[in-house]
Length: 318
Image (cartoon, rainbow, N blue to C red; front, top):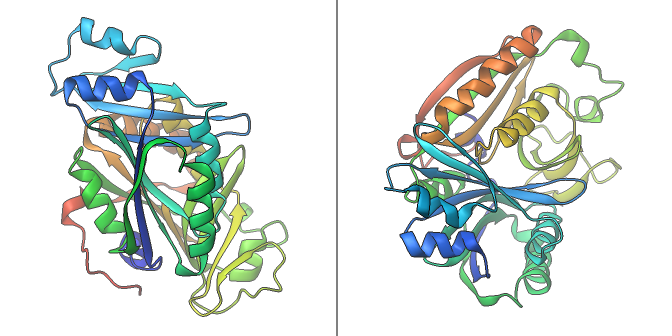
């Protein structure tokens, strides 16, 4: 599985917390409902998606506390979107993501606090410290809950799964020959057809990712990349991929949380995975159905679906 291959490549972890005046934090505290949140950055601003399990006995009076947001309900979940454009949090979040190796695993709202989990490479320690100091230190009740060695991506998602049960989904596809165009794709031109990466964020039609170069094909002379660690062969750059763009945008439009998105190209086979709250798994599969119809040449297929807790936490890079 892809997540096992990239699990321990970023060696540092930070969990920090703060409090803000927000009806969502008030709702979470009032009803003792922890939430996993997905933040999306757009060219014009950003927003957050929240999925709540309907196992909590909400009634219509309870949900009126959230009436300022666009709410959708299914049999299993309450889903809504929070506009973040122009907020201090979004500016801090963008600054944090601007650190080359930072990969945000998730945001949690619990007990009136917001917790942010992210991994990064130790070479970026100074940049991370600056981003936290300039972007979040002035928030009420700000505190770093943990900074130290990372137990890996799997451990982060296992902790998030204690807030709401999470599923790991991995998809395979066959890359159409028309897409394997090295002239227009500097990633394929330099890395060939064998690499792994972790997606950082989608901004418009540009996706930024941390790349793990197994064959020492990238160097600091490649102008389109940012070198994170020459020793560990880790770099950051942008890329475009219609499948990934579709899944991210469609899931967001459907108010469906997707956490993390490790990807791998091996020859003409493209693998990508994501972590989805169990309560919105049917909604994710609606996106999968739409993708199969829209991209028939990619031959999309489900490779794995399993509880996050069943992943091999001790997996090493292959």
